[in-house]
Length: 211
Ligand SMILES: Cc1cc2nc3c(=O)[nH]c(=O)nc-3n(C[C@H](O)[C@H](O)[C@H](O)COP(=O)(O)O)c2cc1C
Image: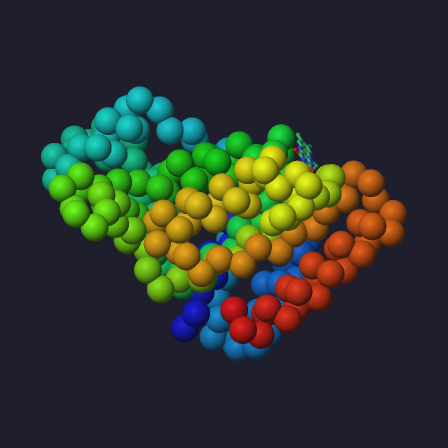
């Protein structure tokens, strides 16, 4: 059985384009096979705790040496990491906010990129000090932007720290098969936005067959 973990990052509800695109993609993907399952993880409209000093101390304490307080500090992280391991597909739907991702998506990232859980660190390893732990998974990032020109090679590509950041993070923990589908011009509206949205819809419908 195949399972998607769907991370929803927009603080907007029904008005959210990334959310709407995500839902149509999930429907198309699930229609292909009744056995396919989707687990939704809301991070845009439900607060994900930012990591803090005690979280960091607990994360760096070897697993068997954590007291109850440390275990409680890591409880949400354990749940979110378990969700990632349980899924063989990951979809993150997120707007670009201030050239990066909204704080809920960043909080989720900080909770799941965890030493000893999703990656290992060994400074003595001659190949690389970092070993990713999440292998054999595919990811899709559905991202929406108010302006345009943030795609690879485009005029504002260097300002894009949203899907590019997520791609780096996912690769770091072992998910290196990542597709990005973006909608631009939400703030301009009109034909350019309609065209961009329609292109993304078509690309997602096509991808649903092979994801
Ligand atoms: C707080 C905030 C910051 C934003 N920052 C950017 C930005 O840096 N670049 C951009 O192109 N659009 C920016 N936008 C526009 C959103 O990315 C755009 O409206 C997007 O389509 C919203 O996604 P949603 O419909 O899924 O909520 C911003 C919007 C908000 C509310």
